[in-house]
Image (cartoon, rainbow, N blue to C red; front, side):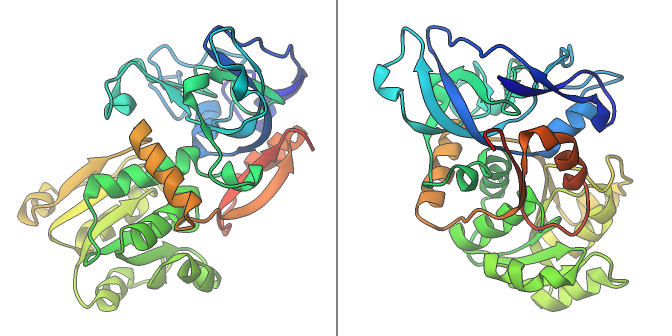
Length: 346
């Protein structure tokens, strides 16, 4: 089969298209013919060495073992099953829950042995992938590409909103609202949990599209008086912040939060380190949350919301698998709306 491998830490030249053997499913696994694989920050930061410590990267302390096939947002067709898997799964269209874990129900995402497809296991930048049968779920939509854009970004966004226990009467600010997680944060907070959403983007040309997704107000982080605009739009301080940016909007976020407000981050594309005046934290009774991925129960609830039409796929562009370098480079450009998807079979 054709696959893309990361051969070491570095730039996109560390991505190589190779011919590889089609993997064989073990007893409780299935072989999936990959139809679509959406791109996430995770595989880019894995390649760049942004996760982990020192020169290592990955979800486990030992770091990624190269070569590794990245890709975690995977849809496809089951074409072969292991000996302990029901043959009826053959021909099923599935979306893959993206990690294994021995953690108890509700705590799978914080288990020490959590291992990620595309980091600890070979992933979806390939024509075929093997995965545990119990972690393959029916696609929420009939289209492979549309169903591929939710797994990591969607579960992360869903978990963020559930962590903050967002209510219909509340106002939520979403940073990076045009990105994969951000655009889903907008939809989940507004359309599933009923909150008022202030979406923060760079380019206000995206305003109408963000409002179609559920945002009440759309503001630009390039504004010289963004904090004042946020408070004015809401008629006062806001309840919560769903953040994927990090340092660039951290001080603004804390400034516009009400007393007792909540700040949840799942990314740091705008800076991984920041300064914090602890007086702001304790005088305003602010609660900080770190968040990434989620539980299998949350994944199921998200899939149900997608199937019911409350959350819609937002896709910027697709690329053929062999253009993975170009796709990852494009992923990092500003001004996009939604996900970038690789198509192994094109």
